[in-house]
Image 1 (spheres, rainbow, N blue to C red):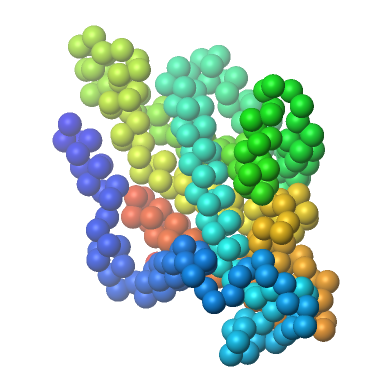
Image 2: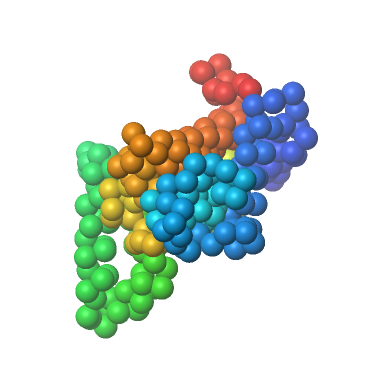
Length: 313
């Protein structure tokens, strides 16, 4: 119990301690908070992200349109705000699903060992054999094709969710299927160590079932590893969603997406560079901020991470 309590205290650092004398973390956290606030208040902005104004197409940044307009006269700031909402929703939901899948696979493999462990880990290794982006494009194409033309009783509810979400549900499924591998490996490695701990042996001698031991003793002690795994998944999910939308297999138009905005800007980059530069900078700064916070969390849970090149700012 003492070990469990000490780990739980370390798993939740207070904000002043987490940000103390770390200007890089403060800036990164501030930027992420700003993105979240802008995404939450997208409907309160003076311009509608979907309203077209063909008389003011490709306008440069001005007082009326702070970040300019796109090729259809839609306000770039409003579309970036809605795109931020899309990216954050997809990143949060797909990360949650991927972490849950990874916990289930990694915990079962690490606790059962033997042929169960070998089967699960060989499947994980086979998944690693495919490039993430290529595998995601393949799944996204299959999902969009089947859900748009779903006629069976099983696929009809899924297709309804897909259409109501403007394609977000398809991206969620794609990212959930491709982002759980890191979490599964990290959790499995931690469970292999914890299953040999004395308090686990004592619980078994006291008559505790495997499910009780896993839920009450092992998984709570895996919490730091799970949080670290999530810090790997979040930036990958944001980048992969942007990449899928850039290639046209992500969120369905006219729903704004950072990746789709970059793809649109590429076609006009010579004449109207702000259409490409603005969303690209937002994506880059968001990924950088998430990675800084992720490195800080990994450093907190594993002090040796600092000595291996972890973030110190």
